[in-house]
Amino acid sequence: MEIGVDLTTVASQGEADVICSFLRANGIACADRLASGPYVEGGGGYGGHREILVRQDDLDWARELLAQPST
Image (cartoon, rainbow, N blue to C red; front, side):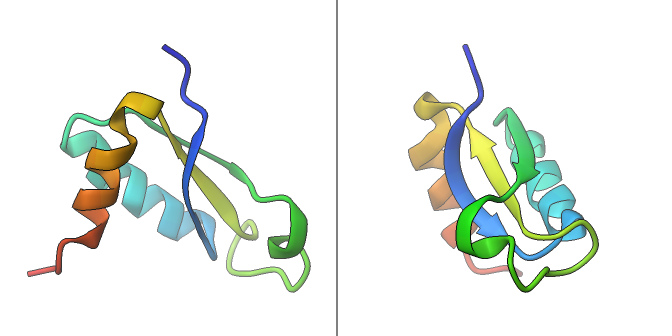
């Protein structure tokens, strides 16, 4: 199955790494790529804005995980 559904866009590579690590720890395959469009202008943190990608089948679960309050 291909990873390629946009879950969210974050401001930096570091933030993308943290989110993908969290998703992977919960059994969700994850990738990131340089964001295109309006996110590119204005930069962002290290590496620029990044799109977080997951499988279509994992999209709802990934959204639920990211919506949970941190403890």
